[in-house]
Length: 167
Image (cartoon, rainbow, N blue to C red; front, side):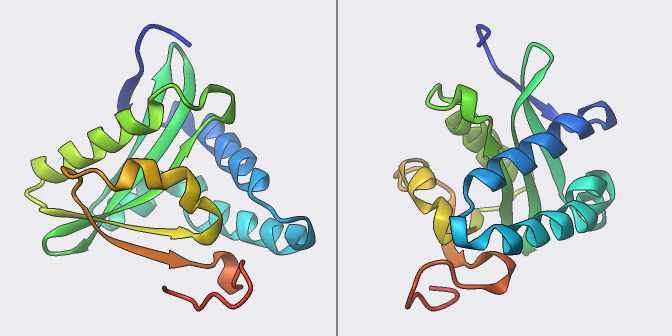
C-alpha cells in the first residue's frame, strides 16, 4: 500500500473497481448454505444501487466516495440523509487484501467530517449480522457521530438463528 490513502468522490472511472469490490467482499460473507440467496442479493444490489451510484445517491441528496491508493480503489462508502439531523453510512467496504491498515478508520473519519460539513449531528448505520465484528472497533469511540446502530438481515432472510430482524 502507498504512503497515504486519498478519499475522494466517486467518478465514472471508478465504476468497475467499485462493482468488483462490492461483489468480492459480499461473496466473502456468504455462509455456505446461502450462496443462491446471496447471488440474488448481489444482482439486486448491483441493479438498484451499485451500477447506478451517481443517480442513486444523487436522487437521495447523498454522495459516494472511494478510498484510493495510487490508482486502485481500496475502499468505498456512501452517505444518504436518513432524517433532518442524520446521514446513513452505507456500503462501507475495504479490499480484503489491504485490511488492518487504517483504511476503514480513515473512511469513517471522512464520513463523520462530511456529516459535520452538512450540519448533521448524527450518523446512522444499518448492517447485517455478518458484518458486526468488522465494525465494532470503529463504532464505539467516544467521539463517534454514530448514535443509531440497527442490525438487519440481507435479502430479508435472518442470517443467525433466533435473531429477530432489526435488533
